[in-house]
Image (tube, rainbow, N blue to C red; front, side):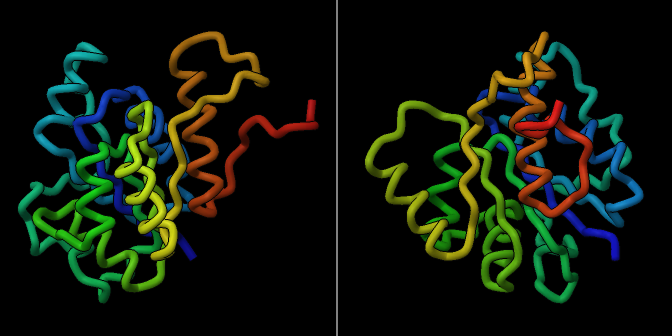
Length: 187
């Protein structure tokens, strides 16, 4: 059975993580039936600033407006398996933690949690305040997964995209997708 995945992209710094995630999901089309994307206006601005382009619009995914509550994943009946918010701002984390579904991204996260499906938040800010930590605790207690954008170095990445891939590969593992990434202990 193929996966149906929602990807949220917030305006937190780290557009390279979203780009690498989009690239890898494109390559995993045999495992993925559908990818729905919600990007905030700030996410598009940060992408342009950090990556110097608007290539997010070139991916073969369905993009939804942040206020499109008619999107299929705004309801549990659409049976999306996983939602990844990458990168996830602390504001978005806080709204999700407290059930404040004021746009499609937070509504979709609320649906994923209530349906007991996988919600993976790739938080990017540092350091964490106690408010951030408590919000991460609430999301975790509700069934979500906090996957900080902390890259690993043991695979000896040689550029920013390879470094970002160390986080994205972990996210795809958590989502249950079969990837061919670096594995500790395997040479």
